[in-house]
Image 1 (cartoon, rainbow, N blue to C red):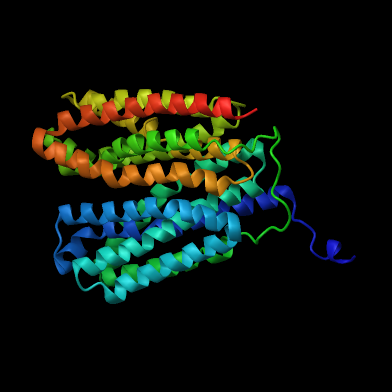
Image 2: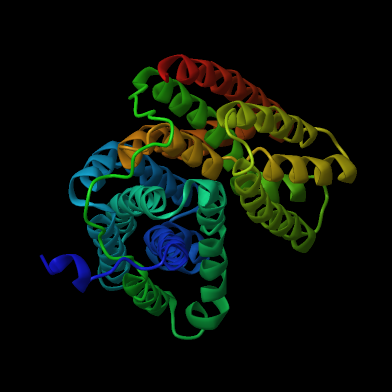
Length: 394
């Protein structure tokens, strides 16, 4: 009889802040390995003997395994809870980082260890989605998901900062050791497991619209594949237009900053809409496709406009998608988002490989035009998925 008063629930605002901070820390910690490999590619490539093409293959393997691990990870979150799985993802990420530092003496071993860390990415992402769905009030979830997804570019910034501060002084292996320590530091941020039944939906909508989720996941594959080309090929494409290496790099910095702000802004706006979130994503993808098409046009003005539209709307939707899916599937948020997240990872795997081959064969203008077409098709599929969802929910 007394156990009901021994552990009073924390105030809602404190729980919300704790859950949001924990989701951000978990997301950054679990995705660090792939961005650190990208940031330290020059130093690692010299020692382990791989080229930019080899880096692309390693990243493709990472996202491919993330896609395969997504649905099983969602099932684990639903069974054991977000806190347990989040800690498991952080520990696996930290262990992978330490393993790379100690054992990566060849390119194949590096790829194998990076593939192992991909499971941590899936675990961390889906545990974070479930934690936000569980602990954050419905009227703040859009912003919380937007901030969580905006935290992913922070991993890129950390990886970039590791180059001058550690890799060029103590060596790239020590950068991985330091990153492992940073990942472990995220463990205390994970909120405690909450006991009791799952929070009911305000509208009673707990349908499992599997077909709709698969369609949205396919749309996410096409959209993610096209959007990932921005981060992968923008600098090289800009340099090919005659921009200096420094100015070409600034285009990517500009795009990343716009992406962070747009993901947060999209989440903030989502909290002010009751319905139509997936349809809103479709509209964002249409405008993003215009931005990608502008990158195929010569001149600096189309380049800047293309970067702003491509990053600002064509790559700002993942948090909004997670929010929309969680809102429609509150009883099983991890399982539902695991389906759509599979599409995001699959696009990250296949998109740069296919578009890179296209750029090599036919040039960047053709590649950007093809990426724009892929994003337009993704918008059409998002609209289809939105209609299927509306039919499947009472």
